[in-house]
Length: 220
Image (cartoon, rainbow, N blue to C red; front, side, top):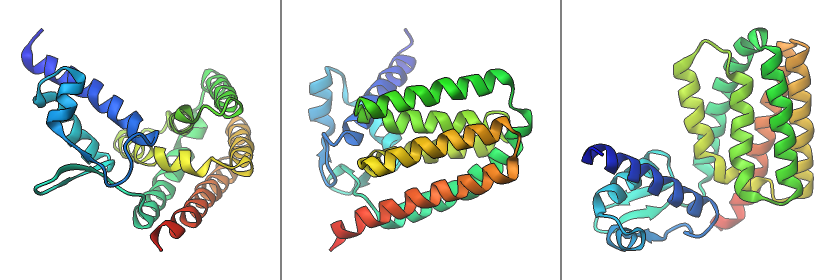
């Protein structure tokens, strides 16, 4: 295998593992991720580790700090407001343009993914919650002819994955998420774009409000 390609493959695998560890709370906010220690733990050189950390920096999960290297970022109310405001603007635009073009296969896939999401909630399989939530949202938008917007939203959903896990800890939150996802799918099936977009705005706004309430006490 070409050396550069091998390093890119390794860095992607390392980034995925570190991402899951950060999202799962293995590496908490403020923890320093040392390149040499990670390289030794994974049995690789520092090159793919460094590339993985730069990727995670782009996702907002770590910050490169002078003289310290990569540090896991904290839960930020400012980031919540920024990410979820952007999600509202862009996801509503995507949904409005996707709904008219959704196929029966798309709708069947949404039903199947929603069942998988519900099963993960019932099993308390927290590592799956954020990922399945993002997949469900992206599947609703897949027919929108807006590839750049889709790429931005995919990145925003990845950034907000750990927030989704945090927000879904209560029974009322995950019950509401299941209910609203079901309602969104039915509105997609009915081709009712205006009602679906209104519900999507409320859906994202409620998650943002829950998160602000959860994170605010941490800052005092």
